[in-house]
Length: 291
Image 1 (cartoon, rainbow, N blue to C red):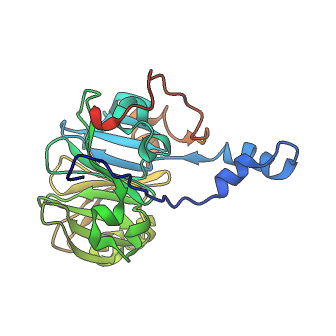
Image 2 (cartoon, one colour):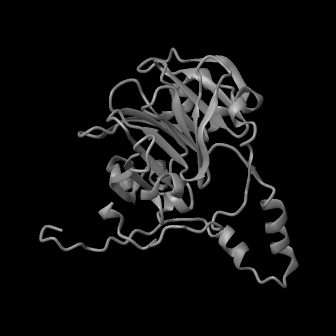
């Protein structure tokens, strides 16, 4: 506040209640608990979000509340793990006790401002400095609702959450995906919405592929105008040809395994339940503003 006092900001997070209800079912009732312990525990997931690092040919890949830093070795299969997998809250201390650290990051894109990125979890987002190679990361702005960070998303499908995103080669522009639509935005100091379109309108190369109906995760390559798209166990490398519809897929839609040798021992992740980790920090209640 202006006079140094801090007002409490109350943010309501919309989260579907189904998983919580499953956890709260009493042990005596067989049905739902067995279903949760069996089928859901066996549920396999791949990549939920990703963003490229400022370190050349490195990218952060997020799987629920974990992440791995990889060197993705463009044009080769020499990709390797640089760090991880780690719990997000262990690699990014500033995200401990936030939705991003506890529930996971479900969308992210890198910023053209140095070591910065925008991260999303359900209807929340934050602007962070991810401090590569260190644990000196910090939250620059947020956590706040997507509509508070990007007011132009009010009353659009993007207000409740974003599936995937990647930054453009055009400074301060990024592509954000939700269902079969995408938004091209400028997130700079004069942030504004440029367009919302169907994926197939803006990216004709994705017509008749699994990506026309939606994308799980994406990151921009360090190679000019290239980006990696992920959905389930598959991925594609595209040239996204900004400001044109001349985009094309490089080499077709492929399976992540075995084409990413670095991820063979990591993917798919089994659903181990998100809230089964303990913070080793001496004082988990500390005020993150003081970091």
